[in-house]
Image 1: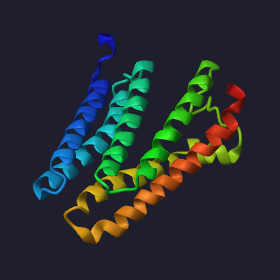
Image 2 (image 1 turned 30 degrees about the horizontal axis):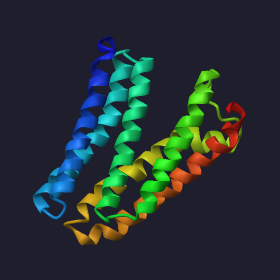
Image 3 (image 1 turned 90 degrees about the vertical axis):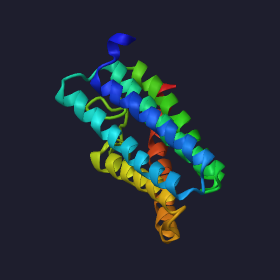
Length: 196
């Protein structure tokens, strides 16, 4: 296990730890403006860490199967915990958290069966067969736009707690992210049945 701890993996672990610091601050001080600003900055760092770990893995030629797994697990953990915390604080509907948790479990479960058969979620060996499925699930545009919607939603939901004028746009991105969560999960569920 320790042999897998290279720079990209350390960045991945660090961003998860920063996310948990953010969750603790939000739970303990949800109405304190100073804590909200700190959480906003930490959230930006967590999001930047997701970009940085991938860039480091490629530039240092340190991509590995443990790193890929760690990155996916960290992405899912960070994402789901943000929605759970926001739901707990009554900043978003509990249904948002339920949708993201359910979709994550179903999609990751199907992808594990696909991986056992030699397929990947993205890239040349993608498990997606249809053109629409490939576009919605595996295309760079879809992946980046979905990540962008979640990043903006996380930041603005936090910031809107001290700047109410951001509430509408924050919720717009929450619902956009949720819509894309469903739309990007459905092709995996529909086309992934062959692996079960």
